[in-house]
Length: 289
Image (cartoon, rainbow, N blue to C red):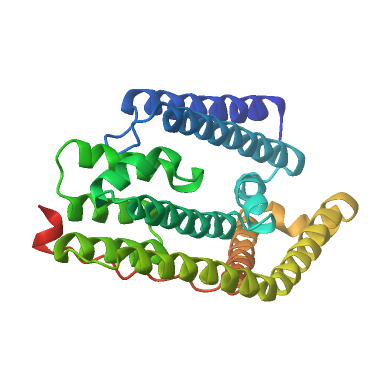
């Protein structure tokens, strides 16, 4: 690949990144985003990280294309730079899931203790929301804001469950909705049991994650060996890869890479296991008003 082609690729990557930033600035933050100042700062920080990550991926693709002279290698390098850190790194989704479950347990215990002081359910939610754990603080703050603005409690709780999006939270929300409609007398005892159930669920998922850690280690080893072999061939045996320099060879390389990508994704899915299924997803007239 000559210098002009390399400069064209660099300018193209820069133009694409600039268009992405411009589109994000024009679109702004959606109306459904959390309205708290802290949540807005976190969102902007995440957007900045995403843009930096995309820029790094584009740079990796340009360097790979310049080094090999293959357009397909540039595309694959950019996609690999985007997906592999998440694929081979720590299971962030599982960590967030555990944090949500623990936060739901703490939030439930706070509600129980506040209700034990002879406060009403809505007043207890308003009092507890500012002290909610960080993992669910934004949804809890939005829940309190909806109640303060006059939204019916069942509808506000349903929206809270949708924001948290966890089966354990669905259990707590279901109990609170029933309590608000039927004037339950033993709500504090029920919340105690639900908090304990949430902690038991977190412990169970920790044990399950420990069993799947071996599978994730095996997946990392397989991916590492394949990548090391590909890089070794590029560095020390370019003649062996010469057939891929033709147009047909580029198509074959793309097909081979697609097969490997599908196999890696399949192994990663096995290592993650099935996602927990929520049950509080069906709207009823009573909760959508």
